[in-house]
Image: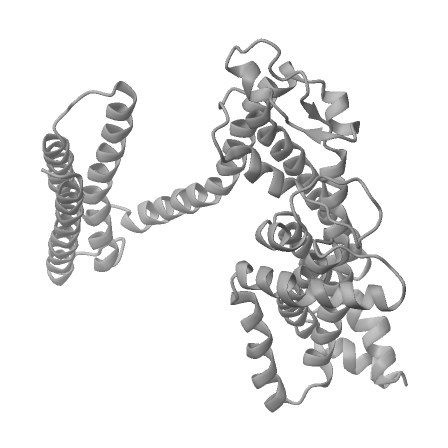
Amino acid sequence: MQTDQILMTFFAGVILLGALGFYLGRSKAARTRAGGTHMHSQPDQYAWFAVLSSAGPAIIAAALAAIVLGVLETAFPGWLAVASALGLGAIGLFLGLNRIRPELRARDSLERTVKWVLLGAASVSVLTTFGILFSILFEAIRFFQMESFWYFITGTEWSPGDSFLAAAGREGGGDGAMFGALPLFAGTFMITAIAMLVAVPIGVSAAIYMAEYAPPVLRDVAKPVLEVLAGIPTVVYGFFAAITVAPLIVAVAESVGLEASFSNALAPGIVMGIMIIPFISSLSDDVISSVPTAMRQGSLALGTTRNETIRYVVLPAALPGIISATLLGVSRALGETMIVVMAAGMRPNLTANPLEDMTTVTVSIVSALTGDNEFGSAATLSAFALGLVLFVVTLALNFVSVMMIRRFRAKYAVNNL
């Protein structure tokens, strides 16, 4: 049997067992209750208990079998594993139906199961974070065994050169390789800063207008139109930056006597800021709208103007959410690749002039992981080192944002009682 046929057979069997368990469990509980016996739980709760008793063992057995067979790499027949899992499900159904009695606390069992399922769902994000960290960390350690960590974070020249020859055992290979990542991080922070200088003022201002001043008819039309920008593919923004914005910047710079490259940092920064505006605007709008009306009314009752109420009451109360929206935009800007490739180029360039070309960390990661480089070469492993530093920077930003949010939330706590 093919893999897709095996999976379809398994899921069909699990659904059949679950449906059978629900029907038989509910029927048995309903008959017992109709006979005048007091039941601890409702018939539907006994039915779901039977579903868990049948489908749960089958799913767990199939998952364990897949893990074990994958680790051992044995040619075990898939249909036999499916039959075994469904057989355990049938045994679980039989035992579950036998346990349905008036004294069975099916409701409590369901509550515990739901709690553990939700805990598992919450743990996925945490485990994924650790998985990402360790998958990057081990390869980054291999890179730092080849190259100096200090030069990596302070060096001003990024030129992997012929480092792939060293990994292939060629004499003299990698002699010209330089892994000073400072130009990459400088370019990343330069373009991110430009993007946030565009996105934050416009996004927050738009959110204030939409939440406080816009009439309902205009809000219902303008907000969806603004959020459409979030669904545009980044490659389209890249074309816009390279074909429209970059030539415009060059023309404006030449008109005032400045020299600008067609691959400059200003164009992707501006376009990236336009791309991030919907995120900041939408989230900030929701946060500002959630500020209690009593706070606005109390401020106006004291004689303040509407503008003063927004400035001194609404915005401080909404500040934690606005900070969260801003940090989300920063994270999006730090990870952007396509716009930078198309508009800023791929040349590492340590400069403070946004009219020159430069590149970012994510672009260099893509460049290092593509092509014919040996995986064990320093050029390829440098991608993991760059990813590790970017991961740490993003984690630090999130930590700082959490601290700031807690501080402002404590300062502007709202008593809704």
